[in-house]
Length: 305
Length: 90
Image 1 (cartoon, one colour):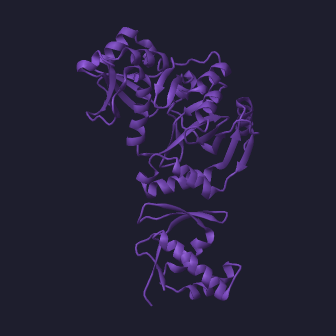
Image 2: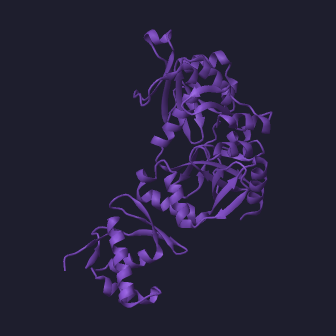
Image 3: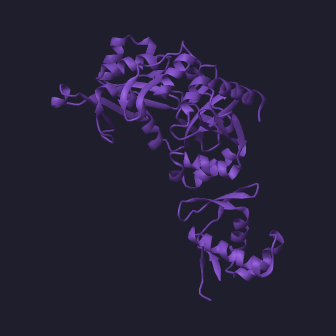
């Protein structure tokens, strides 16, 4: 199987600039076209272990990130995103090309992949148990996810939990983990060997860097996982670690509020989420020390509830 | 008299005395007390007034008579606010 790492960088750049790179991420094939050098570097660094398909192959999503034309090539250059000819977003400064790429990869899934219930949640697996971490921005979800990944957990997704509607299993979509602001230094200190993309400043989310997904997680992207726990995390400076059981009906509502397409799916979403709630135990989790949190999750995955 | 809004499927899941109900007419999902689901299910086959519902459900609640009928009347007004039930002219 051909991976991005098998392509010399000049060939990768030519592919992106020409017919497009067909990159496999979890169940999806993404045809990516771009003429932006930062994006070539970012894909070479963070997607080295991902499979690529032949350029003419089927693709679920067609993404194009190109430099803005005209005077914008020279004056405050910008990156423009288009998807199947439509341009759903305003252009961003060229320096933000890589974070924009990750955001639009997420956008494609959250807006198009309606054969899954898509929850805004990290999901990781250890000892055969998948733990779903739904949370709004600022909860410390991605920091916790990155820390667990650097301690041997299988990354299924940092951002989007895909629950298959037919049988309730979780489909992996392992992609780079998005780290914001102070989380970048925290993870660098926590895992000095971790591969991070160069931080990009002044995005609308602050400074952004991405943590490379573990090769073992990428190679197991075809293996589904059984959900065992739903844990709503909340980072709170100085707080002791606490875990409080959640009623299932309230957990249902909490997950629905964090789902991208629950409303779109209607009754199918209601049924799928009910099955997920049946299959899992739900908790509210508060933490302030990353080490403690990681040790706690290890015990949870090993011993169960 | 009250009735469940015609066409409402009353799809719900209940765990430990709390329930979620999918309102298939509005697309909204509501978190409900288990007692509210009891009232909806009792009302589903045919319109009833609060006093009749109270008599039928007395053994499910820790109340009876006028007090229960008044509590059910309040609950029905709340459920009407979610477009799950509607009042009928007497």
